[in-house]
Image 1 (cartoon, rainbow, N blue to C red):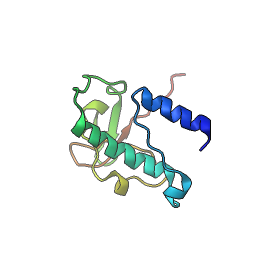
Image 2 (image 1 turned 45 degrees about the vertical axis):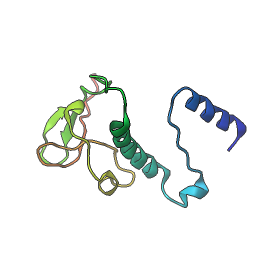
Image 3 (image 1 turned 30 degrees about the vertical axis):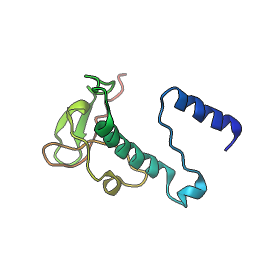
Length: 117
């Protein structure tokens, strides 16, 4: 790691960010993108368990509509439950999601709106 990279990490930590990095040797061939997805999923669970402040009522993107990949159920992102066992359910290189359908339990993905002409 270069000194300027270390400085940036230290600066982010000093500003209150959580920073986690594995170098290529530590990854031992694991796909970094998959590790990031798993760490994000589990980190969000840990934050929910350890947070001392209430979660804000609305987050950017909460109103974005997601559709179930199985039954077609549609709902705003913020109303969908967190997906369980993501590392076993996300295909390598596939679209990442972290919510599942409350109706059937399948993964839900953002509805892609056609661009207006």
